[in-house]
Length: 477
Image 1 (cartoon, rainbow, N blue to C red):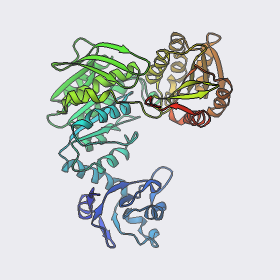
Image 2: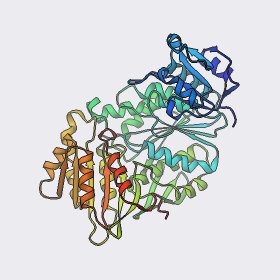
Image 3: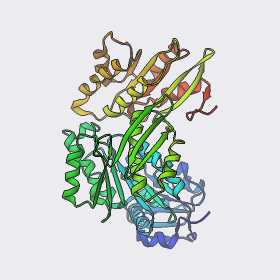
Image 4: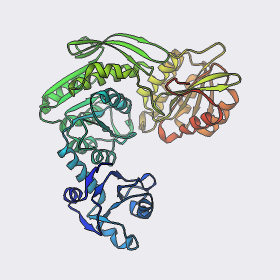
């Protein structure tokens, strides 16, 4: 395996001090001792709950060939004899290595932010770009103050494309991250009510998302959602900041990357879109209108990054939704089966409505029911009761047969639904799991959606453990 970093390059980038006989270099970067692999450099970051220095021995046992540690923690590591690079502080050292990675890279760098659709768009873009060259993208949702520099530091010098997801839950969080990434192309997927507990209104969220413009390269391209209500403000902000090139996607007639036709199917979508001067027909291998918007943005990013558009269009047919973000499982029950839609990773009002629409558009078989299993949307602040209560209308419009709710904030939706929809409320995810196991039957479609902290992933796991699969989430037997 080729080296990701040589030891001298790491020392120079981080202004570190070598201790012991350092290896020639490392093949990976890790900040979690449990997942450290042979040949990795382990960065002993101090987090909110754990200090990586306490797990240095575990990292070495799992194959780390090099430790990056803080000077003030060195005395406590007296029994650890592994090679080390000693730095003032570990997280700033990781940031410095990330900046060095960006400086040495010849890749086209793409940054994605937005209230909804960041991770799905990142994964779809990864899929679309792979036929055009080596793609490096952030793992999972590594989009915060440690995830972004970690993803940068892990980027191979040979990468042709780098994709970075950049998130935030308060103002000023995106600015330092995009300053590290320095993208050639940046996209704001949408501006919607998320993390409202930290913002007064949607305008403040738009301003926070607009921070991504500040890190664009001198001749960089910005891609905005023309269908979003904050499009006009964002475009003006781009002019103020001197963004060289601004483009748009959506259904609006003035969008540069425009949806012309759409057909929503139970397991996929087909679209015709105007991508610059090209009219293209594409199949998106996962269902849902929200993914169509993501696909428009992705095709725009492909073209702006100079990749092969025809190959990207072909690749979208093989895209499938991920665990917690729309993955589908056909599970056996009582001589038949039911469909489980796993949307358990996160939730805000916009993504919750998109998931309810997806449930609406999913066919049910004879005797089957549409069952929405919903948990609290977190970080809604003073808006929480209203946004939970407001879900009643899309639930009714989606012809939901049963609502299974948990969490203190979901009491507002329970009260608003009244007797319109059969509603079951439990205090937590475990209570809903027990109920679901007692009522599920052949033909049901079950959609599970909540903020990550509510723990609805446990419901998904429990159902997958109890009921055997007929097909995987891609539809394969």
